[in-house]
Length: 330
Image (cartoon, rainbow, N blue to C red):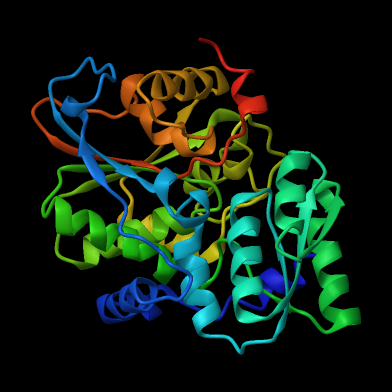
């Protein structure tokens, strides 16, 4: 079951250098996939509530091409692989959408293996790009991928434990520093850890040694939190309304990078995430549950010592349908 994960174990944190991340930033910036430099807005220019007196900036990745930060890593991944390839991946939605979009652009064949718990609407959307979707129980995800690799000669693209992907996501961290050169605190959602690892590496390797970086996970999908405790990547049954933050494991390379560059992983409840989605919507921002976790941590005082600090909060995605929004409190 873990064959494909183990094949990536030879990549170490030493491979993640500032030069590599800057090169990836240029690749992402010039990508034919149309990745944008998303807006950064001051919290004080919104109607959002905040109980602590600090200077917060919000990075709007919900406005990114394909609706989330995932396109950044995908742009770098696909730029380093042959056009017309035959790729398979695992995704509950956002990575799959960006993967499918890139596959169509590059003329590649693609297949997304999705957990049965993922919304049907996500599977339908991915299929509109001409990519096949196979839905399986969460426990069978890697088995399905291994079958595709061994029987159909597909190449596996990992949705969070991949050097090219993490380097692409690091472009977000470099953009943050262009807008806010020396932040005191940066708050980022965490699922498998690819975004958190990339952003944290970009910020710390750029010389912001005193910047505190926090990852935020759902209580029911706290794989990175548990990995920090056990000092190794862990697998667990995960359950959360934030399905994009609920892979069954933390990535090995993301875990190692987060151990180096992330100060702490904090947890938020599904109810706090639901309330965050609603608060953001009332302020005119459409943000999915997975994209709202960092905001939820801020407004629920999960991040320590913010008084008077300059803080960056990343809203990582906005792929949520009207039918899903109807389930959130007013």
